[in-house]
Amino acid sequence: MNLENSIRQKYQEKRIIILEYIYNNLDKKITISEMSEIVNISHYHFQRIIKSLLGEPVGSFIIRAKIETAALLLNYTDIEIQDIAFKIGYENHSSLNKIFKKYYKISPSEYRKNKKNIILENKKISKNINLFRPQIIRIPEKTVIYIQITGEYGNKEYEIAWKELSNFIKNNKLFEIEAEYFGISYDDPEITEKNKCRYDACITINQAIKPIGRIGVKKIKAGKFAVFSYKGSYDNWGDIYDSIYNKWVFESEFELRNIPAMEKYPTNPNITETDKLEIEVYLPIK
Image 1: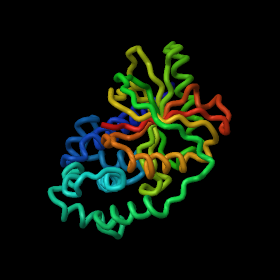
Image 2 (image 1 turned 180 degrees about the vertical axis):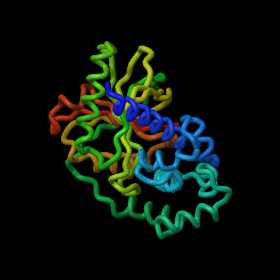
Image 3 (image 1 turned 120 degrees about the vertical axis):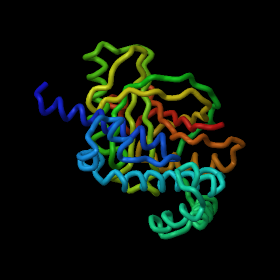
């Protein structure tokens, strides 16, 4: 590995650390000095370096992360708006209301009301969806290696990421028969601009390994999930999530936990024909 690639790899590792820190601390005041110390980058240079890694100023990224998280909670939970404000680090409803209106041109309460009206009355789900009644299960904590992709879901970077993870598994002799393949989609394309949507391609491991470059290591927390089985084309993927979130969630007895849904693939996604996918959607519930 040449020096340039080694330096790039180190900064990709720092990018992963910063993203995890931001999304795990949305309820707190996040400062430049804290973040620069965590990744050991001089605060004199931190903002320019992180801007190049995130594609936008870190302050703008934090605000967007907070507001988009608020929109997701407004969409898919019944949490009081005041409590949502606390969860993303605002002291009161009025502070959230001001920044939310600036971002979406509508108040949080109007957003929630309008979205639910659309969901319950006007949303048409494709009749081609073969989605089975979910199983309710608990899973243990899992350790995964992962690559985060930013951009429109399903773009060409997905194939590249899965190949890179598979090669990493092979080169580091981490292959296990029981390895599981998960995809974690953090953003709703109706809320977040498509080119800024985040997705983690993950493979479970049982051995200790350090993060290298853009390949990170993290835990998928133990918990309860409603697991939906799907067979068919990836072209229907938007309708699948609409069917789950816009129908099942509102009719179900369960509440959602404040973590993203996951997709589990029986085999490496790169070796399955796109019109013959077998996927399980893991919806986190209480």
